[in-house]
Length: 470
Image 1 (cartoon, helix red, strand yellow):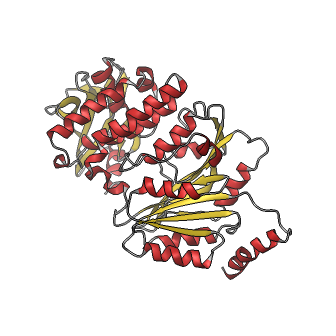
Image 2 (cartoon, one colour; image 1 turned 60 degrees about the horizontal axis):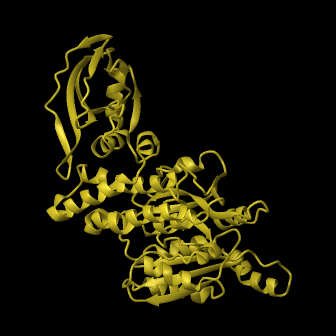
Image 3 (tube, helix red, strand yellow; image 1 turned 120 degrees about the vertical axis):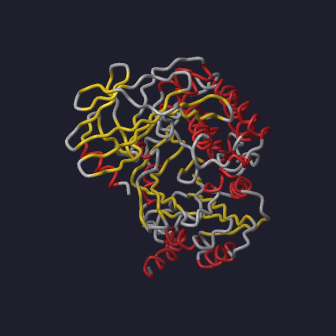
């Protein structure tokens, strides 16, 4: 650690003496609000970079913190004055804080990491290598890999919903429309600052909570067709899942502004802007918006939604905004897109409810529960269908069709609008028996706790699945 700090302090002197070429200058704008327990870990990860801090401009914008975060940032700036500076302002929100840093940044490339997260040691080195490739004069953005750090268990999980973007080495995609390779945030993305300035882009402070960063980078990419977006698996951005669940994202669902106001202040203006800039709405813009919309729909139709968050007028405003947003999503895209976070049941329910399109929906059979009594066990299964598109399910036990004692349908309304219908069934199986389900002549794979069990599942497999999830 001492040697690394010594090298970090001596490198600027070597550059001034002409002994070392000046590195590409990168800016980091770090919007900071009440992150005292985490900010030291963030700076430790910066100091530990294999490249040191040379050529790195870190602008911390203390957005009215009340827990001493600003003092901690000042201490780091005092230790590394050539690399770190701190701006103090009254609390104005993350968008305003990022704009304050953007206004004074001088780097050729810029990103906006969060100070409760941290970076892998080779993060800056890998990003610089990609940026400095001679073939990348049209490079617009460099997206680093993201891994979750679960603070409660001090463990890491490569289970980010969009992790497929980094599964097959470096991927480079045309910014005209990168398709499924969407970029929904700016925390782990370096963007060419000249392009940002060219288009006069800033973060929209009317968009809160969340999505202001997605809005920012999507507007940039919409204005830079023909460029390149690079997705790098090697530099890892560690996204902290706080044990106390106190981050901004942890609390969005309890904030009424996350619902109808997002429709009017975020999604619709963004879709209209893309239409104006390109003459059509690129698929990646639609996918970004749809993914964010879907997080709301899945929440309000799920078991954790607190109906007291929104009154009747706010619920009506949500549905009105949703109608306008879905009207701008292509029917074919909604029908065919394959993207984590966009499950078939929700896409097909939206198609039926808002597009009048009758999808080919194959229900997903989910193992819910099981109770064993010696060589016999009772298993509970469920499946969902878009309301108005309920389909008959046949169960096969050892290849023999049986009459299903199906429970009464359970409707899942979207603020009073018919949306999803759920059905439940219980089956008794004996050891070594195998069960399958058929819909429209096609066998349906079964799942439990997010894992696939297959199409023909034995008694013992069901018992093992239940035991593994306890």
